[in-house]
Image 1 (cartoon, rainbow, N blue to C red):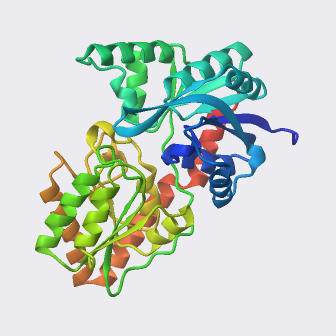
Image 2 (image 1 turned 90 degrees about the vertical axis):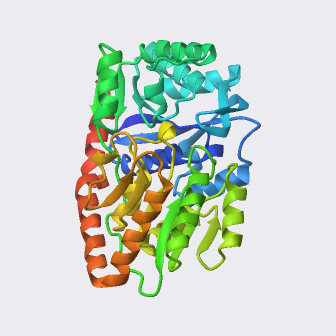
Length: 394
């Protein structure tokens, strides 16, 4: 181990369901390497990636095999958290031993997953070995643990999770709303308020000369990501303006048939790329003019990293409204639509299309301003020193 470095363990969900949390783990592993030796613990089960897929995923993100520790779990596929294919991971006896070994060798643990059995075991084992444990509040689910749920099943589930959370001392909140939840419901706990970050510091800003591209990025679970709402937005938009190109980058989930049908119906206006590499996604940001986000309110991430990625390339944003989104997006950088009104969402898309059509020079200037603001507030060089300070042991 290089002198002066701490050992940091990052715990995302299983890499088999690669999403924002897992991408965050990889980005952190790169950017904290100056201060930490970073290990990523990957909960694995029979419902998981084959070795070849995992190897390609790590290679695409510049992560070495030696940085990833597989922990054996029982995987139970279930409907939860707004998706049909949530995998509940329960560590086996062998997995627990591997888990404990990784935590014992770490100075700090950064927990991204909200999988209850993983959170509980990691938090308890960290207390046992005196390892600093920081729980990352990544989405709307955190707030639901403190709400009065109507069904007996929900009440039991939230009560059990509250018991887990009350034993955790440190929380990472991406915004003031989540920090307030910690202060209000978890006395004695400390919330570090540190926003998300973007690593696209040298993004090339351009504007489409011949076509206006509205980009949508993400996996395709219908409810959680609002794929059905996206389809309605496209339908409503193209009834009024047929010069807009919708490009959808993503795959996986029960929303795929809807997107496939949409792309077949509007072959000239809708392009579905399917699941693509992160490098391809980055290129699509650079080749687009507007970013769309249609996730539903009760599953919205409070600080979607896709916002920062797209806006670092200067893309104005049209999204349904979510808690604390106005901390990221203002009238100069996007439009937030309330009440899941697909008609108003379509009008917002058309608004930006007409700005582009009227004066591409002004639209390029708008994109430059959006990009400059995002880089200034949320660049990795601004945010990561705060993350490193939070994760260093007391």
